[in-house]
Structures are given as C-alpha cells and as structure tokens.
Image 1 (cartoon, rainbow, N blue to C red):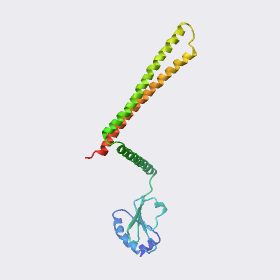
Image 2 (spheres, rainbow, N blue to C red):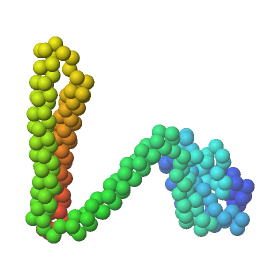
Image 3 (tube, one colour):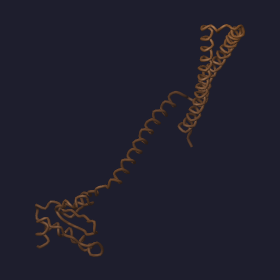
Image 4 (cartoon, helix red, strand yellow):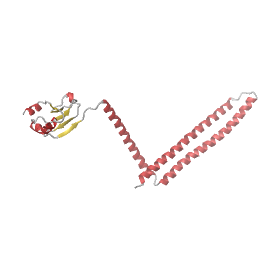
Length: 222
C-alpha cells in the first residue's frame, strides 16, 4: 500500500511523540512486513524537535542522532548512540584515564601481594625483616656521627693553628686554609647524609607498617 511505497523510496515517516507515536509503534511490524524484500532494514530516530522518524535510510542531517535498527520482521537488532559533544568526549577521556590508572594500580598491588606472601611466612618474619633494615640504617647513622665528631676535632685543631698564625701576624698557609675548608664541607656532607638516612628510616617504618596491615588482610580470614 501507500506505506510500503513510501518506505521503498526511503521516505521518513514522522510522528509527534506521545500519545500518537504509540499506535505507530504497534503498526511498525506490519509496515516492515509489507515492505518489499529489498528494504532489508528500518531505522527509527527522534530529531532535535522531538519528532519520531522511521526510514530505511538516515538522512545526513540526522546521522548524529541516536537511532535504532530493525530487521524486516520488526525486531530491534542494533542501537546506534548519538554523537557525543566535545564536553562529553573530554569527560569520557578523563574517566577512561582514571579507569586505566585504577587497572595499573590494581596490577601493581597484585604483584606486591604475591611478593608479600612469597617472602614472609608470618607477621613475626616481617617484624624481624623490618628491625634488620632499621638496624642497618641506624649503624650508618651512628658511624656518620662518629665521622662528624672526628672531623670536628680536626677542624678545631686546624682553627687553633690558623689562629696562631694570625696572632703572630703571619698569613695562614694555603694548605691549612684548604684543610679547614675541606673539613667544613665534609661535616656538612655527613650531616646531610644523616638527614637522608633518618628519612629512609621513617620510610622503612611506614612501608613495613602498611605491608603488615596488607599481609594481615591477605592471610586472616573472618
């Protein structure tokens, strides 16, 4: 009939939304069934003004709208999403980046969990390992303090010797000036090293505390 001829030519059948489109929806399978064989599919979409369209072809001006595809029996076979706005694309990219980061973190955590379970057999083992690492750092800190003390003692000797030259009105020898400079630099370097080791000590403690909490979560059952 007339409806079949319109669809064969790819003419859009436009209806206003509710309530008139309900009857058309009920009529859709009949229209599709009466369409000649060459009309293998039918599309439905809603334009910017809210008009509902049915056609075997989607006009270019409506190609960015969401549309639904039906087979010749009137069964929906596919839904084409509408084109996203620049803002929506940016938000989708942002969420995808967050999701990818979550996946990377989860993979990293899984590797760390396997390492914890393979390395330690109990919480006591972890405490022993932590105390061993802290003891090594403490030994370095103590040794460095000793070096500072001995260097400061030499520096006092150099300073006293330089003062003797100054009191006698003689210039301080270049070698002695260099010794004083080197001793001061060495003291500064050693103090900075101690600060680094103190920071490392804190990091070891924090890392083992976190690992012990995670180990308990992995090994203890409700």
